[in-house]
Image 1 (tube, rainbow, N blue to C red):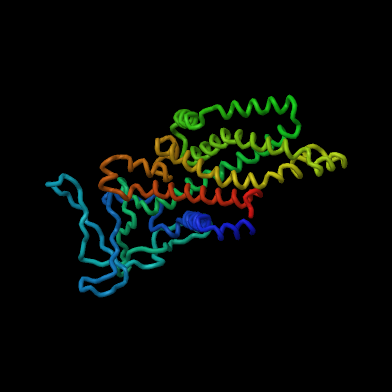
Image 2 (image 1 turned 30 degrees about the vertical axis):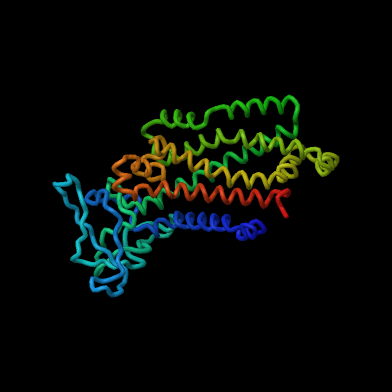
Length: 355
């Protein structure tokens, strides 16, 4: 609670925290917020631009928000496909519109979506951020893709931190030859070029693997090469803690070594662990996005921000379809928010930095 109070006193940390909470709420309720499912596709709407929303009538009077359907045409002079608005029918943007069926949090069946364009019960093709080459709604895929890109870091931490804490705690507490051998092994792990290893491992994965299996394997790979540096820092902290009076008192009372490590020494590293967690998540987000961008991570048709951004690498798409760059903007916002929040927490928990 004290950390939260301090966060809301810092302007940058407060907004970073609010942005992250907002992003996680969006991806948690993606099925309800997204106007389409993650598998929806309409090839007739390939590369359709974002739907325009109007609040004024043709006479200049205020109106409820409305939009028009797009008509796809081929322009022979430009030698390309263009989209024109069908001005014949207005579709009003309504809240709580019926659509594709889904399950809230994977449990409760529902067919209600947060918003949509409707006219007399007929829905229109409403795409707030346009569509991709397969006619899939970019806004909906951003929400579903965020579930992978924004959670892979936390799933990795569940592997990295227990291993790093226990490994570093044992190494620092016992010292001697055991400490030397354990640290040499950790340094060997740290010497492995992680990103290139990920590329090699991802490239040799069986082609028949599903995206869920590939996602889980990427999490494990990221975790197994990320614990060594964390363990080394924990080991240094344990070396300075193990000679404290409360540790010696526990030894005198006959406590076991494992109890002393788990119950009295490792809890003293809590401040560093919290800081390391908030600063580690962005690196995992970037690693997954980089692999998916290279085509070695999450595969189509499943969405992640990395493989969605891959489509925007073509110059023509950057020039004529800028809405495809939205995943890159969200990656930037998420990583920046985590870094700002981590820096603020580090300042709050550093005793030398307190006033």
